[in-house]
Length: 310
Image (cartoon, rainbow, N blue to C red; front, side, top):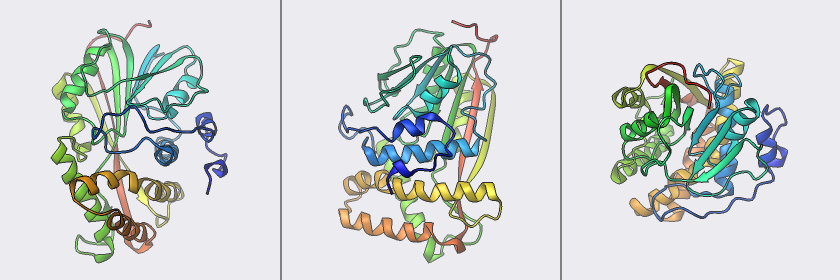
């Protein structure tokens, strides 16, 4: 299915803009980032962006912001979140950063995109931003405490950071760890975690982010877990809809998650990776398994008064 046929129920204009993008894989240091920046990954970003909106009741953020005027979106990808935030806050200056220039060209005038590696030393002057947004960067940073320390420095007093992240485990309400039908899930996620540890860029970080923020100097930390069902098994209509979109997320994302890591680090062949993906896809569509994953939304404040507008 072409993404031109995506339901137009998606509430944010960036989804409609995205269907005209042609993405190019360029600008990334060899071996540094585990996913390609190509059209397939871009399609998955549309689905993931919509999943977060469903999770947060069409909200782009949960931090208690007060008229933010300078906003940084770290790891912006195709720029979906940055564009939607800029539309929602037309007086704000929004900067989106990523490793390569794959962002949407028809962005609002209050958005700029920059090529930057968030794992390097940050070059923004101290107290530059009212709000810093981070989403889906597990497997990218070697030290989240160092990352948050740099974010703390870049925030104005009273400014907020918010990090939305995926847990690197799949859970089930019905099957145990020895269930053969869930073996594909377990193998996939365990291998991803092992590869991340090998490179010093862990995937299993979601449960530690709040404590890392505290260690970096943030205060008033709120950490909330949400459930993303995998499949159509929930009876609750809202969760069933999230599960429907999460099926597409898994179908579109699995190859980009594991192909480079499994062939390079584990010595798998391309066909072995594809065979494993087919096994996991069967589990994705197996309603008996009632699988789900957790995602976390954590926000925290830089000590000090309310940030003053720029």
